Image 1 (cartoon, one colour):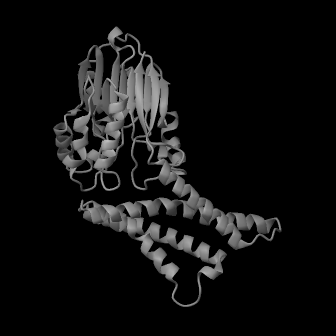
Image 2 (image 1 turned 90 degrees about the vertical axis):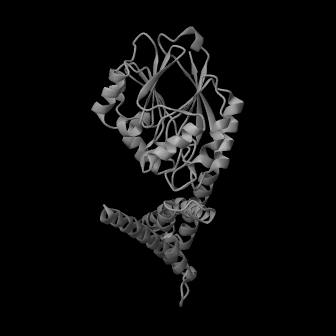
Image 3 (image 1 turned 90 degrees about the horizontal axis):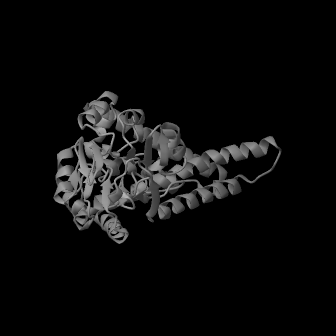
Length: 369
């Protein structure tokens, strides 16, 4: 196991180093004035930047202190910007080659300046866009809905990823927003934590201020299952949030089922859990589980509405294309599969680079009709 981890780290670092080398070579080839003879400080800086995210991640898994948090945040920001610089480097060669093919004498340095400038603008936009959490109001119609539930609102909050980049201050801001929105029910769909070393009780403490008449419920995401899962659940329960462990609760006639992420990914295990909780077809049922997995099974077992997150919508372009390829229409928003409604949230936080391009952080307000 240890050798596999070391091999993975070496592979990731090698890929990052090669990518940084490509960006450096492209920039200096297109703008030769940036690489004067002698010691190339730009080359040294790029080489050092190439190791920041791996070293920061290794430290973040062990230490929660503020210098590590600051280093990890800076490394994550750089990784996001580098993603766009890498695209700009590849694009520079494509545009240059296209121009040469057509016999156009475009200045290489101006090509690089334009594309790298656009890359920087996209990265800065992504950083700013990831800070502002949107509120999306979504009406849902469920059959056999009890009269008492008509007009009630449930808030869906997923993927906060509390840890080194976003901490207790971010949690307090979300709780304050929820307090102003005054939902009847709060549903936290996993990845509350980022999975790095952290004071989990301090990060969960703002959740004590949640005030929802019908309660607040939580299911685990994959990041709560990396290691030491019990400590995360203890902190969540200590903040007054009910953790659903593959179980059903009935809230004024509405069946709420919560399934752990690790159990939702296996078809037969999920089917056994849903059958074990004995879902009544005469009452509406809501499945809260971290990822939009095994939707066909949820539909077959009579679930009316599934609420999930996990995908982040890919978080930022071009990874948005990858996420859409994996999850299809269910990567985000409200969609239907047979009699099953599915809502997948982009999530409120970010993982890794704190960028959002092509997606936006959100809290979902589901109004039952």
